[in-house]
Amino acid sequence: MARRSQSRSSDPIELAPLVLVKGSEAFLADRAVSELRRQATERDASVERVEISAATYPAGQLDVVTSPSLFGEPRLIVIPNFEVTNDELMVDLLAYIENPADDVWMIVRHNGGNRGKKVLDALKKAHVPTIAADPLKYDNEKIDLVMSEARRLHRRIEAEAAHMLVGALGSDLAEMMSALSQLMSDVEGTITTQAVHRYHSGRVEASGFDVADAALAGRTAQALTLLRHALATGVAPLMIVGALASKFRSMAYATAPRGALQSVSMNQWQFNRARRDVQGWTDTALAGAIEAIALADEEAKGLSRDPERAVEKCVLTICRLRGSARA
Image 1 (spheres, rainbow, N blue to C red):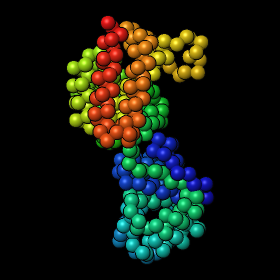
Image 2: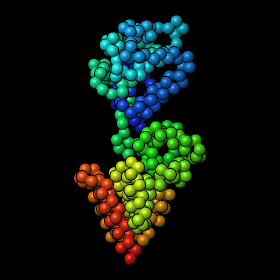
Image 3: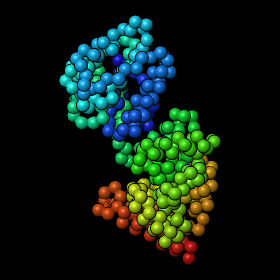
Image 4: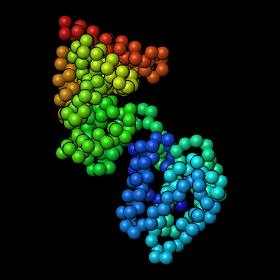
């Protein structure tokens, strides 16, 4: 059997004789099972689909559904709720793992909890491929998911646009990925920040990047209003700090000599935008802003008991520095 690999949510999903989909994030699990079903049908349109209910499984059913069929069609067997399995299915699955059938693809979906641990351990020992469907806690994981989905569909989305989409809709993975699908349907070529703004302006207006834009321009009242709106609608403080860091990192790169940028991955549009953003900033003010963002990053990751207040102090500092640079 193929060597087991614990996948990330952004990794390619590949069909195998036995696949475990494990985790409580329903969207990711549904997405994985749907993709595996698609691949099975693509390999053989005559594939026979069988779904087994773990809670009501009768002993011996697995032997029946995995035995050679009369016409030799391959079979796709899905167990969608293994976390509520009865003892009969556990016994039969433990035996099946030792001797899987030919021309059968089996997907075992476990949505969380300790029930079925013996089988999960046996699947791990047998190096069965495992697709992770754990909740995505961090925004960078969600951005990776958006970027990988675009690549899977042979499309491209700008990193800043992916960041913006996560900031606007990342609290609900299903909604976020549905929005991405709609963007890919409606927008030709690369999905840009302008496209995300155009289609999701009502949600994106309070994203981390808009807070960053207002702060770097020194618009204190607007920056604080957007910050409070963003926090109130579920944008994580660390996400806002990440947007600030991305903006000011690009601005710092834009002030460096061209020869020093050989190892920096920046598109021309990103470089041009950073050159515009940095106008009016002195080196001293820029360095002070970067120090403030570094402190806010540490505080948002646990150094402070009040991450929201830490980000607010950072935004106020950046606005003050912009004002002093202008003066």
